[in-house]
Image 1 (cartoon, one colour):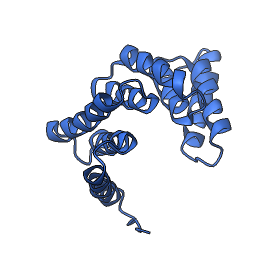
Image 2 (cartoon, rainbow, N blue to C red; image 1 turned 180 degrees about the vertical axis):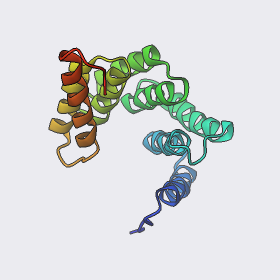
Image 3 (cartoon, rainbow, N blue to C red; image 1 turned 90 degrees about the horizontal axis):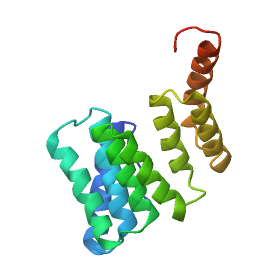
Length: 165
């Protein structure tokens, strides 16, 4: 088993190398293309490599997955993530998430991204509900915990008539 470093950027680059190997061995491996797109997006969105070239690598991987299996929920999830992270196109991201949800109704990642979209659009109640559903579906995932606290504090501040903290 391959061990990852403690450097997040290096971990992402190592994941890309492994996923590139996977799709070289099996060019029909749709989930690997989806994950490859996601990892490229992570490098792009986090600022480790916020370049047009990195963005295009993400797009190419996702588009390959879409050509191989256009109706796959995982493909629509990555198309949603791309619309959200690259273009801040919340409407397109929501439409893709609904398509993903139709085949992956209990996928926590769909609820996490839905919650992030809701947060961006100040839909606090919906955001909290989606984060809670994500935690319910994937209780060992620690990612939602800090976000939930942030959303709850913003929601409470707004209810009191204060600013969204």
